[in-house]
Each structure stands twice: as structure tokens, then as C-alpha cells.
Amino acid sequence: MAVAKYLGIKNVKSVVLQWPEMVPSLLSKKIDIIGGNIHGNPDRYKNFAFTAPAWWYATVVVAQKGNPKGIKAWADLTKPGIKLGVVAGTQASAWAKDAKIADVSQFTTGALQFAALAAGRIDAVVEAEPPSVVFITENPKAEVQILKGMKDVPSAVWANYARYGTRFQDCTLNMAYSRALGELIMHGVIGRILEKHGF
Image 1 (cartoon, one colour):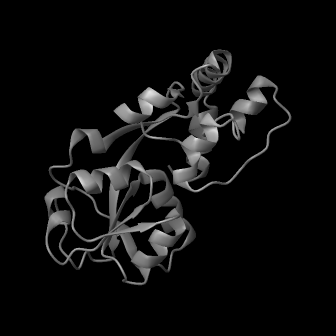
Image 2 (tube, rainbow, N blue to C red; image 1 turned 120 degrees about the vertical axis):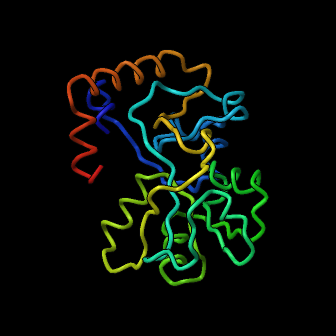
């Protein structure tokens, strides 16, 4: 919304989609921008363009309070008896598949995966830090926590930049969006937005 305001775009329609619908909706022109940050990977780079980064964030592992399963390293997620939750179609689901994690539950939304974790139906969630912080902040009674000091997290998992997706042919939109992000960073707007939401 801050980018649209900066660019003087007044007619903005937000469409809420599940992750598996994002890229097909972009490519079929049902939407013009994937406005939830989307992690870059080789397959996605072939299909659509990414904007400049807006901010840096970590991927985190969220577990029940007290970490009853003793998850301390990325490899621990592959141990028998660990039930992992991910949102279908996200980069986390691809990482879980690559790591050959046997017991993975795929959810259609982040809210559902966190609800399953809080209810004890799964043991951990691999998720971007922003939605994890938002869930914990908005649900203080949920007995979940971000695990600190995780060991051996692959660098491809750990370091991420929040960016957005556009179609390749929409070069002007991408350049304007990317320039706006840069300006909003320099003017402190993005920093203030992040602070407002607890980041």
C-alpha cells in the first residue's frame, strides 16, 4: 500500500490467495503483483520477475513453548517422531521435500499451520520470520516460540530478502515498484512500517 501511495496509484484492489494460486494468478493476469513477499528460487526466476528488495528477513523454526522435542539443528527436523508443518506451495515446502523430511503436514494458510502447532497436532513449523512474529504477537496465549540459535541451517534457507513478483513483460511496473521501494527505504518509511508491526 505504501508503494502504491508513493507511485500515486489510487485504484488498488487486494486479492487474497493461497500460495499455490499466486504464480498462476500473476501469469494469467488476474493480479499484477505478488504483493506478499515471495522467496526467489531457480524455478521462480524462470517464470516471473522480482522487484528490488524491501527488507531482509530470516526463516525460522517455530515450536511449542519449551521446545519439548529438543529441536536444536536443521537436521533435527528429519528425526523420526518430529511432525513438521509448512504452507503448501511455499519455499518451506520445497525445503522440507529437499531435506527428505518424512512427516510433513501441508496447510493451505499460515494461520492453519500455526493453529495446528498451538494445538499440538504438529511439532514445528518452518516459516518466514514476519508471519511468525505476527502470529505470536497476536496470539499471546498460544504456547509457541521461535527457536533461537538453530544450528546447521542451510544458507539458502536462512538468508532471504522480501521481494515481490511481476510479469517479465511489465518492466515499467517493476522498475517503478523497485524505485519506490528504494525511496521508501531511504525515507525511513519501510523501517517505520516494520517497527509498527514488531520487527
